Each structure stands twice: as structure tokens, then as C-alpha cells.
Length: 303
Image 1 (tube, rainbow, N blue to C red):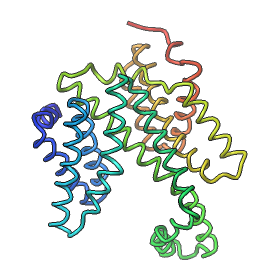
Image 2: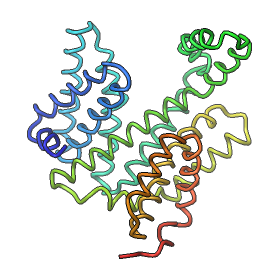
Image 3: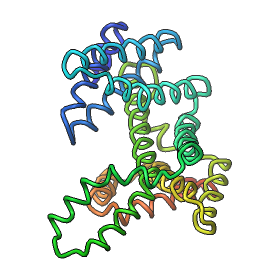
């Protein structure tokens, strides 16, 4: 990883090469799509950490153009290049600008949360029926379900698809946000590898979202529960996943302060993989509570 990070930061042409190649490899298909997409975003993050606003922006634009040219030659379309630039690289670039100006990983990540929430409300302002717009997208899934479960009544299946459509805007925004988090954190880890910053672990172990974000999150969650507000309901999905990160930071920080073995962290991540539907809500609540109680500070420091 260190060799790759050093190669990326050597000059703009090498950075553009790596970013655009990762983007093209991301078109292979799942699960490689997600892996290579995150790698391209992390490379953009590293460049933005290390270089000036102008230089990093030129790399971002150059990567978009290079990906567009390759896409035109290979598939006759620039859609992947536009998608990468607008939905991943530009947001990552903006979050790192926040970090560079404030020196705060928390503010950078919180900016991503606000960006995701604002995008959801903009969708509900600009689109008459966002849930209805997702129905054609979910139609192939409905047909697959009918083949796998032929005994399932069509009416029940239609209701399931309708419920899924009502949550799709928030689910997509939350998935994109998690991708941004990974890009920022991996880019920050690479920054340490090239000797431009201290280890990520020390900064991550202190990660806590601030009171303002907590109050806004509680207000949105209250709207989603108490009022018939689809936009707030979808925004609550973003909030729920966003607070998993500070929840994990509580675990990391507590293990470090208590001097425990990293086996504990391994166990947590195994649970996250195999019992995520149970652990994710717990971590989310833990991250939200930590804003007010600073749980890590209550753990006794052990040498």
C-alpha cells in the first residue's frame, strides 16, 4: 500500500493514471465495482490531502476526462466518467477540503452526512414521487423474486416492492455516504504511509460527532417517527448508518484505552459481517449516545 500511495503522490500524471484505471476496473461488476470505486476515491482523497486546491482539482478533472475517453473508446459512453466524477470524486474532494482547512476529521465526515441529507431533501423537493420513480428500477428484482418464490402472492410481493421503493432514496444516499467515509479514511491512512501525518488510529479513536449534528439527527429521527414525512424517513436511514462510524470509534478507543487485545476488534467486525442487522443499530445508538456521554473517557487507561 505504501508503494501505491507514494506512486500516486509522485506527480499528477501518475495520480490520474491510477484513479482512472481504478475507475475502469470498477466497471467489471460486483463485488469488484465497489472495491475499485473506493480505491479510486481514496486516491483522490490522498491527492487532495497532499496537494494544493488547484493541483488536486486539476487531477480530479483530468481523471474524469481520462475515464471519459476510455469509456468512449471501450463502450461508446461517458456516463461512468460523469457518475464517478459527480457522485464520488467531487464529494470526496470537498470533504478533504474541509479537513485541510479545519484539521478535523470529524467535521470532514459530518460534512458528508449533511451532504447526503441535503441531497435527499433536494430529491423530494424536485421530484413529485421519488418512490414511484424507483418502481421501474426495482421491477427486475420483482421478476426475480417471482421466479425464486413462485408461491408468494403477487399482491404481497407488490407491497414489498412498494415499501422498498419508499426507502430507496435514503438507502442509496446512505450507501454513497458509507463509500465516502471509506474513501476519506483510506486516503487518511495512506497519508500516514507517505509520512505526511500521524497514524490514522490515534485520530479515529477520538472520533465523536458534535452536539449540533446530534441535535439535528435527533430532530430528523423525531420527524420520521412522529410525522408522515417520507423525506425525514429516508434521511433517518442516512443518520442510522452514519452513526455506526463513531460507534465503531467508541469500540476502538475503549479497547485502546483499556489495553485490550485487537482480538476484541476482530470479533466486533466478524459480528458486523455476520450479524450486521443486529449490531448496526447497536453501534448507531452507541455513537449517538457517545456525543453526550463521552463513553471512552470513562474507560480506565491501562498501560
